[in-house]
Image 1 (spheres, one colour):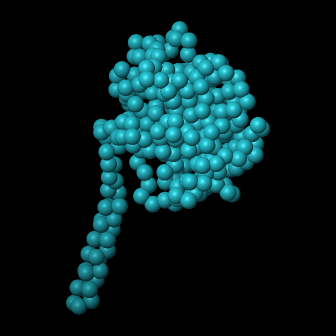
Image 2 (cartoon, rainbow, N blue to C red):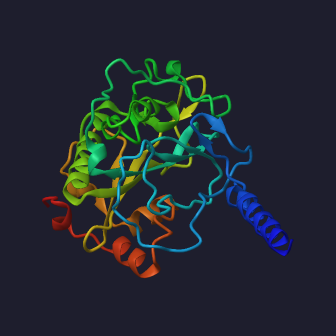
Image 3 (tube, rainbow, N blue to C red):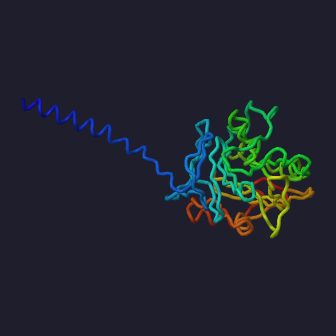
Amino acid sequence: MQQMKYLIIVIIGALATIYGKGTLFNNDAGDATEVSAGKTMSSKPVSSAKGSASKSIPSAKDNASSRQQKTFDFTPKTKADGIRLERTAYTLLYNKEIRLPLWVAWHLTKNHTSGTNKREGLKFVEDEDVPMPRATNMDYVNSGYDRGHMCPSGDNKWSARAQEESFLYTNCCPQLHTLNAGDWEELESKCRYWARKFGDIYIVCGPVFLNKKHKTIGKSRVVVPEAFYKVVLCMQGTPKGIGFIYRNDLSNKKMSSYVNTIDDVERITGIDFFPALPDNIEKKVEATVNLSDWAISE
């Protein structure tokens, strides 16, 4: 009888342990509006991206997952309001007032620089995860501007879903064709070169607004940026970072003429990049640029 009581106590304790593990799946989403695989998880806008409580150095491991590898929280912080959208390959903060993303961030690995899922046959489509009015095809027709990718199609050949999501209007901005098909595309190709050379890099890009009043296109009044920024972080070997500012104009210049420190880009945009990095690393990679580290000629 005593052994039977002991056995019952052991069984009850085991069941309590098993069912108690359900608390591990209690995910507090906070105030962010996150959209994953087309599903809205919350309806509250955020003024900044969710940060990481602990600052850990990112790892380069890539297990070829169908979703982007988040080895650390590489998304930036900004005081501007927006709707945070989580996609297969990238994360962005969308501002409904200008109908554009404020930033788009992604982790580009060597394995993600190639693939069989090409852009042929794909067209930009409205993003139904953001409220009306929003960018539509007709806003761009005869506007004089290209639909300029932020996270480029060339970075998404590794996944059919990622490639399709790169053609959402929340992932593009009005760009002059000379920039979109010229110097900006050259930088996109250079980023894939760096990802293959180093193993992986972290990229954040978006629009820059320099004037008090801005041109708009279409009935949706999509704002036309005066410039664009891109910042790149590499944690392989000695950590290093580089920033770029490209005017939305007809320029055709050497890549070195667009180079800035990440600190400079932060000053121009008001965005805090890579805030989850340890402070000593963040200060170092954002304050200086060595062109030879990035195989850029002066």
